[in-house]
Image (cartoon, rainbow over all chains, first blue to last red; front, side, top):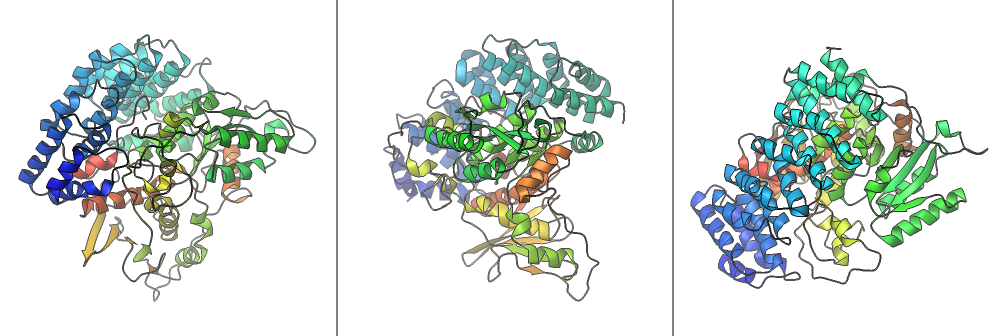
Length: 232
Length: 406
């Protein structure tokens, strides 16, 4: 049954009976406590990814690798990050694979990508709260593509380290979309700083957003933060 | 990767939002007339995702004299045109603006609040972006698609001191007898309560069909993986057996989340664990009959599909009566919608405050993961993770299709 399911993958396309792949799903669940079986499954799935199968088949494989992928899957997935039709599903696996190689692969891909695929990788690094990507993300805050700048800001907010906060405080957004993201991300960082006992650093962030030039809800958030920094 | 890993941070958000809640100052410039309250007493609203449940939500808000409804948004031209026409007919003008992209609506400074009834895979992104834009939100249930989304929605709500209500009216209205017995002390100390609901959503591999005119398919998919258009993939009917988006895991948790939001919501309300999440999910497979027990820190159990047990059946210790507690109720008038609007005015937390709604849908998501992995799980509510369980933790979230992120 399992062999037949892998055979199906060779011609699998949108509209093919999805149940034909169920033996692979079942093997994934059954192998939770069997590392050797897992490695075998992973190897077979990665091998499919390297062949000229359809987008639907690669979609299925990436979903499976999201569950069981290890560092061994990373090179094949990373190779798809620059493919417009595959980039998201490659991240679908890479974002959830805990091996550090997965984050490294996305960091390595970042300078080679642009547009939507770059934004996707930025988002995944943020979702992973990947501290090592802070310098690269900080450099993107001033990107001329405001969508990239916005995405980098949100990712830095999710990571939330003091270095991320500093980068957000230094930047001067050039669009309303990026400005909103920088504000939210900086407030996100400030909450983390405050929780970590760094009230001086947090207060500096809150003060920046407490002015009359800010929207009312932002001023409210900043004021509340300043009160919290003062222990009130 | 849990965003709630620092409980001090969460405590700050809770304390801060409670410490500085100010009366609402209307931002609308909408004009009044003789039949409706003046602009300063009306909430200016728009609706995002305006078919099916969104249509009902729109009707409810449109019918309120303390609401000025000014905008509709849907990725289906036909639906948004119908919703605009309905609004314009109601007000006998042509002022309602129709949008394909919710971000354009959220950018409007004159809108105070929005209701959201898109498919579930859009909820978190829209709710969080609405909070960043200073809007209050009424979001249809189930409010989340993944476990990670919930804490981020709560954080955005608290950060900007927004009023964000979940959307299950049944929590308060459908299980009243059980709620009254539990809160009234008649059943003594509650041991367990059972919820019967399902099924789980499934993978989707429907064949491509031609995209109908006026449908922005890319925007419908949004953060979900790309897939070819098929009517059954995106139909908004309430089925969960393959002919609707509620059937498919990229957009929904299936009946487990869709009706689960109602039943688990009713159960957590009845036994008063709305503010908690369980610490363990015990998976049972007895001769192919699969069911769950959610174990709370206080010893209480919520069962899912317990054999030979009715929905919302509850077991207590009726020989030891407890003193009654007052049952929480909606504020304002007009059911759950009125509760939301009243809270927008007063800045109180609504009956289905987002945190309570998130705790409810978390039960559905935790259960789905246990069923998919076919084993029991430990859960750390504070850290929002499965301790030491890397495989289960992979199901906390999913990578979103570019350019969408939380």
